[in-house]
Image 1 (tube, rainbow, N blue to C red):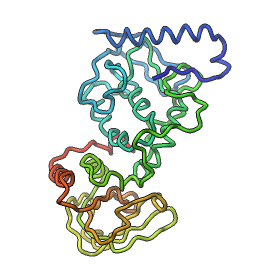
Image 2: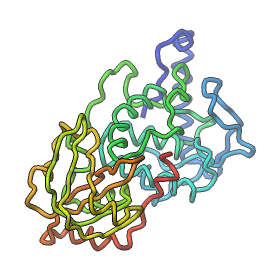
Image 3: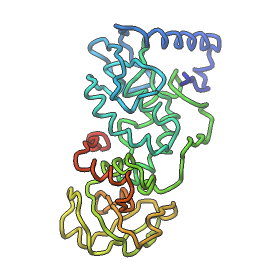
Image 4: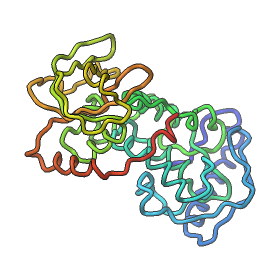
Length: 318
């Protein structure tokens, strides 16, 4: 994690002062994270109009073990209320859980840093927001992934709310035009990745409204999408909002998937676990996995699907 002050007239007023201020920030980071009853004074940055004026002094608390989004983020204490106006750890965990599947997609190396700087901000004497360019870089890398599952980039992460001429949280230089792809990155279509990984199957299920077992009749390209036409016989596993009349003539779209690899759509002889969501008047393909009961991962996922508690995406991605 770096504390970045992008090049600007305001930023260049005093290089020596800037260096001292960064040093003080680093010292505050170390001290605040080890504090047992940390409080800070009311402060709202002028450059961030979406900030909040707290009615009571926020507290510094331990990041709970079950806040999966922010495990291993580089510090162990967080400010509460956070910068998204969540006032309890229960609310933080509930809202943050919706973002964990996005981390699995490895769409940008700064995703966790951006999200945790807001959900679980580090304890300092004043709130420090993520840099606008970091938000924009993560958005540009991850918004297409989210769109493939029918989720828009949420309003709470509108990047122009964040500072660009003040001290802010960053991970690379703001003039870097391309982020280094993280280890494990693959250009594969998001609904088609990690075919036999239990976690991926559960992520896909949670991003889906319905699921069934079926074979594929035909795959066609339609503009920048792929149209997946199914055979008539289907075994419904999760109905969601899907009606029987929809199931009979169901055609799914692999959103923006005309050119990305999807191994499952290359072999139409197999049965597949197929998942999807209805967005507007379209049915989107959100997950496809070979129906293979010889796979321990697959059997484990199918068993978990019956009782697995999914994050409440609808509360976050509006």
